[in-house]
Amino acid sequence: MNTPPNDRGLPGTNLDPWFNSYAQRTAGLSASEVRALFAVASRPEVVSLAGGMPYVSALPAELITSAMERVMRESGPMALQYGSGQGTMVLREHILDIMALEGISGSVDDVVTTTGSQQALDLVTKLFIDPGDVILAEAPSYVGAIGVFRSYQASVAHVAIDEHGLIPEALRETIARLRGEGRTIKFLYTIPNFHNPAGVTLTRERRAEVLEIARRNEILVLEDNPYGLLYFDEKPPEALRASDDDGVIYLGSFSKTLAPGFRVGWALAPHAIRDKLILAAESATLSPSSFSQLIIAEYLRTADWQGQIDTFRDVYRERRDAMLSALNEYLPHLSWTVPTGGFYIWLTLPHELDAKQMLPRAVKELVAYTPGTAFFADGRGRHAMRLSFCYPTPDRIREGIRRLATVINGELDLLQTFAGTGALDAARPDSHYASPPPDLD
Image 1 (tube, helix red, strand yellow):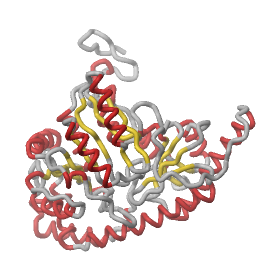
Image 2 (image 1 turned 180 degrees about the horizontal axis):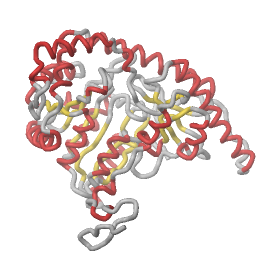
Image 3 (image 1 turned 135 degrees about the vertical axis):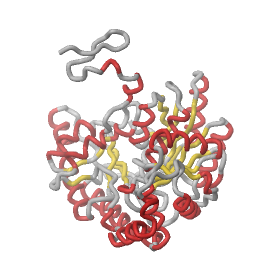
Image 4 (image 1 turned 180 degrees about the vertical axis):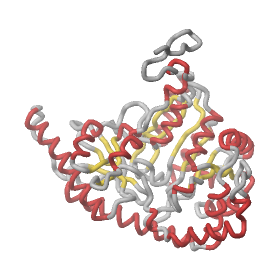
Protein backbone atom coordinates (compact mmCIF):
# COMPACT_ATOMS: atom_id res chain seq x y z
CA MET A 1 0.00 0.00 0.00
CA ASN A 2 1.34 3.44 -0.91
CA THR A 3 1.08 5.89 1.96
CA PRO A 4 0.81 9.61 1.26
CA PRO A 5 3.80 11.71 2.33
CA ASN A 6 3.50 14.78 4.48
CA ASP A 7 5.03 18.13 3.57
CA ARG A 8 8.46 16.79 4.56
CA GLY A 9 8.12 13.85 2.20
CA LEU A 10 7.75 11.34 5.04
CA PRO A 11 5.26 8.47 4.69
CA GLY A 12 2.60 7.59 7.20
CA THR A 13 2.17 4.20 8.83
CA ASN A 14 0.42 1.00 7.84
CA LEU A 15 -2.27 1.66 10.44
CA ASP A 16 -2.77 5.34 9.59
CA PRO A 17 -1.46 6.57 6.24
CA TRP A 18 -2.04 10.18 7.31
CA PHE A 19 -0.13 9.90 10.58
CA ASN A 20 2.61 12.32 9.60
CA SER A 21 0.18 14.89 8.24
CA TYR A 22 -1.52 15.68 11.53
CA ALA A 23 -0.87 18.98 13.29
CA GLN A 24 1.67 18.80 16.09
CA ARG A 25 -0.98 19.58 18.69
CA THR A 26 -2.74 16.25 18.03
CA ALA A 27 0.08 14.60 19.96
CA GLY A 28 -1.76 15.83 23.05
CA LEU A 29 -4.94 13.95 22.14
CA SER A 30 -5.41 10.65 23.93
CA ALA A 31 -8.28 8.61 25.30
CA SER A 32 -8.77 9.39 28.97
CA GLU A 33 -8.62 6.56 31.47
CA VAL A 34 -12.19 7.42 32.46
CA ARG A 35 -13.53 7.04 28.91
CA ALA A 36 -11.57 3.83 28.40
CA LEU A 37 -13.37 2.34 31.41
CA PHE A 38 -16.90 2.94 30.16
CA ALA A 39 -17.09 -0.14 27.91
CA VAL A 40 -16.18 -2.43 30.80
CA ALA A 41 -17.94 -0.51 33.55
CA SER A 42 -21.24 -0.49 31.68
CA ARG A 43 -21.57 -4.26 31.90
CA PRO A 44 -24.43 -4.97 34.32
CA GLU A 45 -22.44 -7.42 36.43
CA VAL A 46 -19.74 -4.83 37.14
CA VAL A 47 -20.21 -2.39 40.01
CA SER A 48 -18.87 0.82 38.52
CA LEU A 49 -17.37 3.25 40.99
CA ALA A 50 -15.55 4.90 38.09
CA GLY A 51 -17.71 7.35 36.16
CA GLY A 52 -19.27 10.56 37.42
CA MET A 53 -22.69 9.86 35.91
CA PRO A 54 -25.55 11.69 37.64
CA TYR A 55 -28.45 9.59 38.89
CA VAL A 56 -30.91 10.98 36.35
CA SER A 57 -33.62 8.51 37.42
CA ALA A 58 -34.21 10.79 40.41
CA LEU A 59 -35.55 13.39 37.96
CA PRO A 60 -39.28 12.79 37.27
CA ALA A 61 -39.64 12.22 33.54
CA GLU A 62 -42.92 14.13 33.38
CA LEU A 63 -41.15 17.36 34.32
CA ILE A 64 -39.10 17.14 31.14
CA THR A 65 -41.78 15.77 28.82
CA SER A 66 -44.23 18.48 29.83
CA ALA A 67 -41.58 21.16 29.24
CA MET A 68 -40.81 19.65 25.83
CA GLU A 69 -44.48 19.60 24.86
CA ARG A 70 -44.99 23.23 25.83
CA VAL A 71 -41.87 24.34 23.97
CA MET A 72 -42.90 22.56 20.80
CA ARG A 73 -46.49 23.78 21.04
CA GLU A 74 -45.64 27.43 21.76
CA SER A 75 -42.14 27.91 20.28
CA GLY A 76 -41.57 24.99 17.94
CA PRO A 77 -40.11 26.86 14.96
CA MET A 78 -37.70 28.77 17.23
CA ALA A 79 -36.65 25.60 19.08
CA LEU A 80 -35.80 23.85 15.81
CA GLN A 81 -33.92 26.78 14.26
CA TYR A 82 -30.40 28.17 14.55
CA GLY A 83 -30.00 30.56 17.45
CA SER A 84 -27.67 33.16 18.83
CA GLY A 85 -24.03 32.20 19.29
CA GLN A 86 -24.30 33.59 22.82
CA GLY A 87 -27.36 31.51 23.67
CA THR A 88 -31.03 32.32 24.19
CA MET A 89 -31.81 35.37 26.31
CA VAL A 90 -34.51 33.59 28.33
CA LEU A 91 -32.14 30.87 29.52
CA ARG A 92 -29.35 33.32 30.29
CA GLU A 93 -31.77 35.23 32.55
CA HIS A 94 -32.52 32.01 34.46
CA ILE A 95 -28.80 31.32 34.74
CA LEU A 96 -28.38 34.62 36.59
CA ASP A 97 -30.93 33.39 39.16
CA ILE A 98 -29.01 30.14 39.60
CA MET A 99 -25.67 31.88 40.09
CA ALA A 100 -27.26 34.27 42.59
CA LEU A 101 -27.59 31.27 44.94
CA GLU A 102 -23.78 31.25 45.14
CA GLY A 103 -23.43 34.98 45.67
CA ILE A 104 -22.78 35.94 42.06
CA SER A 105 -24.32 39.04 40.55
CA GLY A 106 -23.79 39.61 36.86
CA SER A 107 -25.24 40.88 33.64
CA VAL A 108 -27.15 38.69 31.23
CA ASP A 109 -24.94 40.22 28.53
CA ASP A 110 -21.87 38.56 30.07
CA VAL A 111 -23.31 35.03 30.10
CA VAL A 112 -22.36 32.77 27.18
CA THR A 113 -24.28 29.51 26.84
CA THR A 114 -22.17 26.58 25.67
CA THR A 115 -22.48 22.93 24.72
CA GLY A 116 -21.78 21.75 28.23
CA SER A 117 -19.22 23.47 30.44
CA GLN A 118 -16.63 21.26 28.75
CA GLN A 119 -16.96 23.38 25.61
CA ALA A 120 -16.55 26.53 27.68
CA LEU A 121 -13.35 25.06 29.11
CA ASP A 122 -12.13 24.31 25.59
CA LEU A 123 -12.98 27.80 24.32
CA VAL A 124 -11.21 29.58 27.18
CA THR A 125 -8.12 27.46 26.65
CA LYS A 126 -8.20 28.14 22.91
CA LEU A 127 -8.39 31.89 23.55
CA PHE A 128 -5.48 32.08 25.98
CA ILE A 129 -3.00 29.30 25.34
CA ASP A 130 -0.04 29.33 22.99
CA PRO A 131 2.12 26.18 22.87
CA GLY A 132 4.26 25.99 25.99
CA ASP A 133 2.18 28.40 28.11
CA VAL A 134 1.57 27.29 31.68
CA ILE A 135 -1.77 26.51 33.29
CA LEU A 136 -1.84 26.14 37.07
CA ALA A 137 -4.12 23.33 38.28
CA GLU A 138 -4.72 21.54 41.54
CA ALA A 139 -2.97 18.24 42.24
CA PRO A 140 -5.00 16.18 41.36
CA SER A 141 -7.27 17.86 38.81
CA TYR A 142 -10.25 17.08 36.55
CA VAL A 143 -9.25 14.60 33.85
CA GLY A 144 -11.34 16.35 31.18
CA ALA A 145 -9.53 19.62 31.83
CA ILE A 146 -6.12 17.98 31.58
CA GLY A 147 -7.15 16.54 28.20
CA VAL A 148 -8.18 19.96 26.91
CA PHE A 149 -4.99 21.59 28.16
CA ARG A 150 -2.84 18.95 26.49
CA SER A 151 -4.71 19.34 23.22
CA TYR A 152 -3.63 23.00 23.06
CA GLN A 153 -0.03 22.12 23.99
CA ALA A 154 -0.18 23.77 27.38
CA SER A 155 2.17 22.85 30.20
CA VAL A 156 0.22 21.95 33.36
CA ALA A 157 1.86 22.87 36.66
CA HIS A 158 0.15 21.17 39.58
CA VAL A 159 -0.35 22.96 42.91
CA ALA A 160 -0.75 20.95 46.11
CA ILE A 161 -4.04 20.67 47.98
CA ASP A 162 -4.97 19.43 51.44
CA GLU A 163 -8.16 18.96 53.43
CA HIS A 164 -8.95 22.68 53.04
CA GLY A 165 -8.44 22.77 49.26
CA LEU A 166 -5.77 24.59 47.29
CA ILE A 167 -2.82 25.57 49.51
CA PRO A 168 -2.09 29.31 49.07
CA GLU A 169 1.57 29.03 50.02
CA ALA A 170 2.07 26.26 47.47
CA LEU A 171 0.44 28.52 44.89
CA ARG A 172 2.84 31.37 45.75
CA GLU A 173 5.84 29.07 45.55
CA THR A 174 4.77 27.56 42.24
CA ILE A 175 4.21 30.98 40.66
CA ALA A 176 7.58 32.26 41.91
CA ARG A 177 9.38 29.18 40.60
CA LEU A 178 7.78 29.36 37.17
CA ARG A 179 8.33 33.09 36.86
CA GLY A 180 11.95 32.56 37.88
CA GLU A 181 12.28 30.09 35.02
CA GLY A 182 10.88 32.67 32.60
CA ARG A 183 7.66 30.73 32.02
CA THR A 184 4.39 32.37 30.96
CA ILE A 185 1.45 31.57 33.26
CA LYS A 186 -1.92 32.18 31.61
CA PHE A 187 -4.47 31.13 34.22
CA LEU A 188 -5.26 29.13 37.35
CA TYR A 189 -7.83 26.37 36.83
CA THR A 190 -9.65 25.41 40.02
CA ILE A 191 -12.69 23.43 41.19
CA PRO A 192 -13.29 24.99 44.63
CA ASN A 193 -16.46 23.11 45.59
CA PHE A 194 -16.54 19.31 46.16
CA HIS A 195 -13.51 18.90 43.98
CA ASN A 196 -13.32 16.39 41.15
CA PRO A 197 -11.59 14.04 41.93
CA ALA A 198 -10.52 14.86 45.50
CA GLY A 199 -13.91 15.73 47.00
CA VAL A 200 -12.52 18.65 49.07
CA THR A 201 -13.83 22.21 49.32
CA LEU A 202 -11.77 25.40 49.40
CA THR A 203 -12.34 27.28 52.66
CA ARG A 204 -13.66 30.82 52.80
CA GLU A 205 -10.37 32.17 54.14
CA ARG A 206 -8.33 30.50 51.43
CA ARG A 207 -10.66 31.76 48.70
CA ALA A 208 -9.80 35.34 49.60
CA GLU A 209 -6.09 34.50 49.76
CA VAL A 210 -6.07 32.67 46.41
CA LEU A 211 -7.82 35.60 44.73
CA GLU A 212 -5.33 38.05 46.23
CA ILE A 213 -2.39 35.96 44.98
CA ALA A 214 -3.93 35.85 41.51
CA ARG A 215 -4.57 39.61 41.46
CA ARG A 216 -1.07 40.45 42.67
CA ASN A 217 0.47 38.24 39.99
CA GLU A 218 -2.01 39.26 37.25
CA ILE A 219 -3.16 35.68 36.71
CA LEU A 220 -6.68 34.96 35.47
CA VAL A 221 -8.75 32.47 37.49
CA LEU A 222 -10.92 29.88 35.73
CA GLU A 223 -13.48 28.69 38.30
CA ASP A 224 -15.21 25.42 37.36
CA ASN A 225 -18.25 24.81 39.55
CA PRO A 226 -20.55 22.01 38.38
CA TYR A 227 -21.22 20.63 41.89
CA GLY A 228 -21.65 23.77 44.01
CA LEU A 229 -25.39 23.35 44.62
CA LEU A 230 -25.06 19.66 45.52
CA TYR A 231 -24.02 20.18 49.14
CA PHE A 232 -25.20 17.70 51.77
CA ASP A 233 -25.41 19.82 54.89
CA GLU A 234 -23.83 23.25 55.00
CA LYS A 235 -23.62 25.43 51.89
CA PRO A 236 -20.09 26.00 50.63
CA PRO A 237 -18.67 29.54 50.74
CA GLU A 238 -19.63 31.97 47.99
CA ALA A 239 -18.10 31.44 44.57
CA LEU A 240 -14.76 33.05 43.77
CA ARG A 241 -16.53 35.01 41.04
CA ALA A 242 -18.75 36.61 43.70
CA SER A 243 -15.67 38.49 44.96
CA ASP A 244 -14.01 39.34 41.65
CA ASP A 245 -15.85 40.34 38.47
CA ASP A 246 -12.75 41.20 36.48
CA GLY A 247 -10.30 38.44 37.32
CA VAL A 248 -12.49 35.32 37.29
CA ILE A 249 -14.21 33.38 34.52
CA TYR A 250 -16.96 31.24 36.04
CA LEU A 251 -18.09 27.96 34.43
CA GLY A 252 -21.44 26.37 35.26
CA SER A 253 -23.40 23.40 33.99
CA PHE A 254 -26.83 21.77 34.02
CA SER A 255 -25.27 18.32 33.69
CA LYS A 256 -25.17 17.61 37.43
CA THR A 257 -28.24 19.51 38.66
CA LEU A 258 -30.56 18.54 35.80
CA ALA A 259 -29.30 16.08 33.18
CA PRO A 260 -26.12 15.77 31.10
CA GLY A 261 -28.00 14.71 27.98
CA PHE A 262 -29.04 18.30 27.29
CA ARG A 263 -25.36 19.26 26.93
CA VAL A 264 -25.89 22.80 28.19
CA GLY A 265 -23.43 24.78 30.27
CA TRP A 266 -22.31 28.38 30.46
CA ALA A 267 -19.51 30.81 31.12
CA LEU A 268 -19.74 34.14 32.94
CA ALA A 269 -16.78 36.19 31.79
CA PRO A 270 -15.40 39.71 32.07
CA HIS A 271 -16.86 41.81 29.29
CA ALA A 272 -13.89 41.89 26.90
CA ILE A 273 -13.32 38.14 27.28
CA ARG A 274 -17.06 37.58 26.73
CA ASP A 275 -16.81 39.09 23.24
CA LYS A 276 -14.01 36.75 22.25
CA LEU A 277 -15.81 33.76 23.79
CA ILE A 278 -18.85 34.42 21.60
CA LEU A 279 -16.69 34.63 18.48
CA ALA A 280 -14.90 31.41 19.41
CA ALA A 281 -18.21 29.67 20.15
CA GLU A 282 -19.68 30.74 16.82
CA SER A 283 -16.59 29.47 15.06
CA ALA A 284 -16.89 26.10 16.79
CA THR A 285 -20.65 25.39 16.65
CA LEU A 286 -22.43 28.43 15.15
CA SER A 287 -24.81 28.27 18.11
CA PRO A 288 -25.68 26.02 21.03
CA SER A 289 -28.83 23.91 20.72
CA SER A 290 -31.91 26.14 20.78
CA PHE A 291 -34.02 23.07 21.50
CA SER A 292 -32.12 22.10 24.65
CA GLN A 293 -31.90 25.68 25.90
CA LEU A 294 -35.63 26.36 25.54
CA ILE A 295 -36.57 23.10 27.25
CA ILE A 296 -34.33 23.90 30.21
CA ALA A 297 -35.67 27.46 30.37
CA GLU A 298 -39.25 26.12 30.42
CA TYR A 299 -38.35 23.60 33.12
CA LEU A 300 -36.81 26.37 35.23
CA ARG A 301 -39.86 28.58 34.68
CA THR A 302 -42.51 26.01 35.62
CA ALA A 303 -40.95 23.33 37.85
CA ASP A 304 -39.78 23.45 41.45
CA TRP A 305 -36.18 23.14 40.31
CA GLN A 306 -34.72 24.03 43.69
CA GLY A 307 -36.85 21.31 45.25
CA GLN A 308 -35.51 18.90 42.65
CA ILE A 309 -31.95 19.84 43.57
CA ASP A 310 -32.87 19.08 47.20
CA THR A 311 -33.94 15.62 46.01
CA PHE A 312 -30.61 15.10 44.26
CA ARG A 313 -28.81 16.16 47.44
CA ASP A 314 -30.68 13.52 49.45
CA VAL A 315 -29.89 10.85 46.86
CA TYR A 316 -26.17 11.62 46.76
CA ARG A 317 -25.89 12.05 50.53
CA GLU A 318 -27.33 8.56 51.04
CA ARG A 319 -24.86 7.12 48.55
CA ARG A 320 -21.94 9.01 50.09
CA ASP A 321 -22.85 7.64 53.51
CA ALA A 322 -23.11 4.10 52.09
CA MET A 323 -19.62 4.34 50.63
CA LEU A 324 -18.08 5.79 53.80
CA SER A 325 -19.70 3.05 55.89
CA ALA A 326 -18.43 0.33 53.56
CA LEU A 327 -14.91 1.77 53.52
CA ASN A 328 -14.86 1.84 57.31
CA GLU A 329 -15.95 -1.79 57.41
CA TYR A 330 -13.89 -3.34 54.62
CA LEU A 331 -10.80 -1.10 54.29
CA PRO A 332 -10.29 0.50 57.71
CA HIS A 333 -6.48 0.55 57.31
CA LEU A 334 -6.62 2.96 54.35
CA SER A 335 -7.26 6.71 54.16
CA TRP A 336 -9.85 8.59 52.13
CA THR A 337 -11.53 11.96 51.83
CA VAL A 338 -14.91 12.75 53.37
CA PRO A 339 -16.75 15.02 50.92
CA THR A 340 -19.53 17.33 52.08
CA GLY A 341 -21.12 17.39 48.62
CA GLY A 342 -20.61 16.35 45.04
CA PHE A 343 -19.84 12.89 43.67
CA TYR A 344 -16.37 11.69 44.68
CA ILE A 345 -14.12 10.17 47.32
CA TRP A 346 -10.32 10.02 46.89
CA LEU A 347 -8.83 6.82 48.29
CA THR A 348 -5.11 6.62 49.14
CA LEU A 349 -3.40 3.23 48.88
CA PRO A 350 -0.21 1.96 50.52
CA HIS A 351 2.89 2.91 48.49
CA GLU A 352 3.40 -0.75 47.57
CA LEU A 353 0.28 -0.74 45.41
CA ASP A 354 -0.31 0.71 41.94
CA ALA A 355 -3.96 1.51 41.25
CA LYS A 356 -3.52 1.47 37.47
CA GLN A 357 -1.80 -1.90 37.40
CA MET A 358 -4.37 -3.29 39.81
CA LEU A 359 -7.37 -2.26 37.71
CA PRO A 360 -7.55 -5.38 35.48
CA ARG A 361 -7.69 -7.55 38.58
CA ALA A 362 -10.44 -5.34 39.99
CA VAL A 363 -12.47 -5.68 36.80
CA LYS A 364 -12.04 -9.46 37.05
CA GLU A 365 -13.62 -9.14 40.49
CA LEU A 366 -16.44 -7.13 38.84
CA VAL A 367 -15.68 -3.71 40.28
CA ALA A 368 -14.29 -0.63 38.49
CA TYR A 369 -12.70 2.59 39.69
CA THR A 370 -10.58 5.34 38.14
CA PRO A 371 -6.84 5.19 38.83
CA GLY A 372 -5.29 8.31 40.29
CA THR A 373 -2.90 8.69 37.35
CA ALA A 374 -5.83 9.94 35.24
CA PHE A 375 -5.92 13.15 37.28
CA PHE A 376 -2.31 14.26 36.92
CA ALA A 377 -0.49 15.64 33.92
CA ASP A 378 2.89 14.42 35.15
CA GLY A 379 2.35 10.71 35.84
CA ARG A 380 1.69 10.93 39.56
CA GLY A 381 -1.23 9.32 41.34
CA ARG A 382 -0.28 5.64 41.14
CA HIS A 383 -1.08 5.14 44.81
CA ALA A 384 -4.59 6.62 44.70
CA MET A 385 -7.96 6.14 43.06
CA ARG A 386 -11.18 8.08 42.60
CA LEU A 387 -14.37 6.38 43.78
CA SER A 388 -17.67 7.75 42.49
CA PHE A 389 -20.77 7.25 44.63
CA CYS A 390 -23.22 9.17 42.45
CA TYR A 391 -24.74 6.42 40.31
CA PRO A 392 -24.92 2.96 41.98
CA THR A 393 -27.54 2.23 44.61
CA PRO A 394 -26.35 2.10 48.23
CA ASP A 395 -26.47 -1.72 48.19
CA ARG A 396 -24.41 -1.85 44.99
CA ILE A 397 -21.92 0.61 46.46
CA ARG A 398 -21.49 -1.59 49.51
CA GLU A 399 -20.96 -4.65 47.31
CA GLY A 400 -18.54 -2.74 45.12
CA ILE A 401 -16.40 -1.72 48.10
CA ARG A 402 -16.44 -5.32 49.36
CA ARG A 403 -15.14 -6.50 46.00
CA LEU A 404 -12.55 -3.73 45.93
CA ALA A 405 -11.36 -4.73 49.40
CA THR A 406 -10.90 -8.30 48.17
CA VAL A 407 -8.61 -7.00 45.40
CA ILE A 408 -6.62 -4.59 47.58
CA ASN A 409 -6.15 -7.00 50.47
CA GLY A 410 -5.27 -9.79 48.03
CA GLU A 411 -2.57 -7.62 46.49
CA LEU A 412 -1.16 -6.78 49.90
CA ASP A 413 -1.10 -10.46 50.86
CA LEU A 414 0.78 -11.33 47.66
CA LEU A 415 3.34 -8.61 48.27
CA GLN A 416 3.93 -9.79 51.81
CA THR A 417 4.27 -13.40 50.70
CA PHE A 418 6.36 -13.11 47.54
CA ALA A 419 8.08 -9.73 47.55
CA GLY A 420 9.53 -9.87 51.04
CA THR A 421 7.83 -6.65 52.04
CA GLY A 422 7.19 -7.83 55.56
CA ALA A 423 4.05 -7.17 57.52
CA LEU A 424 2.29 -3.94 56.71
CA ASP A 425 1.00 -1.75 59.49
CA ALA A 426 -2.75 -2.14 59.19
CA ALA A 427 -3.58 -0.22 62.31
CA ARG A 428 -6.57 1.98 61.94
CA PRO A 429 -5.52 5.67 61.83
CA ASP A 430 -6.93 8.02 64.44
CA SER A 431 -8.98 9.74 61.73
CA HIS A 432 -9.30 9.65 58.00
CA TYR A 433 -8.10 12.50 55.87
CA ALA A 434 -10.79 15.02 55.14
CA SER A 435 -8.85 15.57 51.92
CA PRO A 436 -5.77 14.17 50.18
CA PRO A 437 -2.42 14.93 51.78
CA PRO A 438 -0.30 17.39 49.80
CA ASP A 439 2.08 14.60 48.71
CA LEU A 440 -0.16 12.45 46.55
CA ASP A 441 2.45 10.45 44.70
